[in-house]
Amino acid sequence: MSKCTTCTCHTPLGFDIRMAFQPIVNVNSATVFAYEALVRGSQGEGAGSVISKVNTENLYSFDQACRVKAIETAAAVELPTKLSINFMPNAIYDPETCLAKTLQTAKKVNFPHHNIIFEVTEHEKVENHDLLVDVFRTYQRHGFMTAIDDFGEGYAGLNLLADFQPDLLKLDMKMIRNIHADRVKKAIFSGIHKVAEELGIILIAEGVETHEEYAFFKHAGVNLQQGYYFAKPALEHAPIPDWH
Image 1 (tube, rainbow, N blue to C red):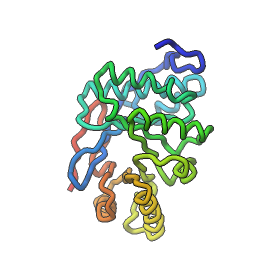
Image 2: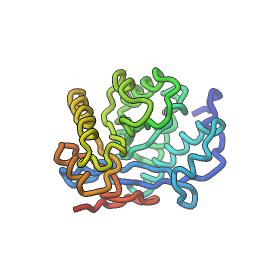
Image 3: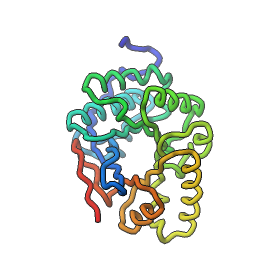
């Protein structure tokens, strides 16, 4: 593929990254639905340390490097299921062009592209709403699953959902925390759950840390769950979840 000149995605990143994986568990079947790829530093430093190095100069390079590293590492560890990759909504200028390297990498390492989920976080303010919707539709057209991460916390919210319905919604962990004992959180969750059901969207409870949280969502019919209750992220390894 020839290098484009519209962005800096081919510019060297300037620092090394690695990937950790955390399982998204189907608590109904006691199986792993997917593993989320989480960026780490060259010495295993946390995501915050790595992201602090990202700026307007290397934003495109970072987003592409994370995609490529996630797919390459998943193939190397023979990830047995789907791979969920975060993408930065403001690091894409043309959906097809920016997706080309992802497809190229998946083909090169023989990782089935239909096993890839792309998720966008609500934490980052979306500068071009229409472009993000176009990105999602392009990913869907190519057979990728799509997800909105941290739903209910940040910028995208219901406006994005009104224009595009992803395959998955990952509930923000602030909503998850102690929800079994919080009347307000229960009411908000009930509304989101109803909307998701009517739109045919699967919910994921992200950031589950206690048995009570796990039991609440399982009883509510949210079968896909993720968090320390099942397994912590493991560097370049696909951890086996364990819970009671």
